[in-house]
Length: 266
Image (cartoon, rainbow, N blue to C red):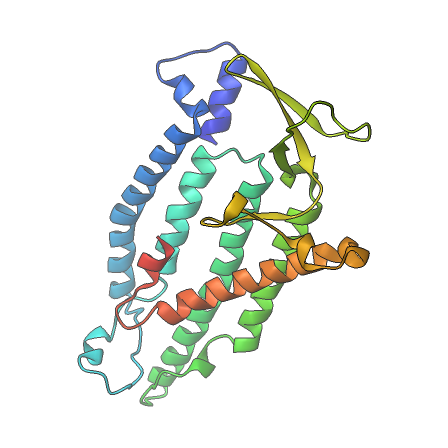
């Protein structure tokens, strides 16, 4: 929002010291990092104290590990801190017209809702057991069913994958090296760089950048025979679903007794 505010003020001809900083993505990234740290440190501490005051804490499953009971009562719903530290800087400093930014915001809220509902159901089961005077024992059955979590991740993968493939605002641009462009080339951008005109064209296929390999790019169409390369989008969407599901569950598995989710998310 601050980014769009500065854009609007500049269009009106209003200039002030430091207004040009918002035009550089490096400046906005640095501000976002600082802001997220401030949010985590200030509001995070207040939220943790509030959760402790309301006795909204974790119940520890008896795994026979040394010192595991010391973690009993650790405040749950700490994911709210992570979500705030992501969304607030993004909404303030990012270009909200970008499809990638909107997808990131949607994904954060979507997965955050799944985690919130899961924690809420577990807390409700704990509260009911305490009201009944029973000895509550933590169980995976208290929260969302495993299949429901997977379904939510798959649906998110479908939304992200289909948007990235079919939305024209997520096209992949690459520099064209050659004397003349093909006659059927439509999407072309010409940019002046160091006094030289450089031509960029849209690559009509999904590409993933991978470090430490030749050319740093992976083209999904190469995995399919030429006769069925029109179905490359299906392979691409499946890969996106797998990545989202694997990363989401990997974070949950890593998040153990010592609350490693924050470090993994960072």
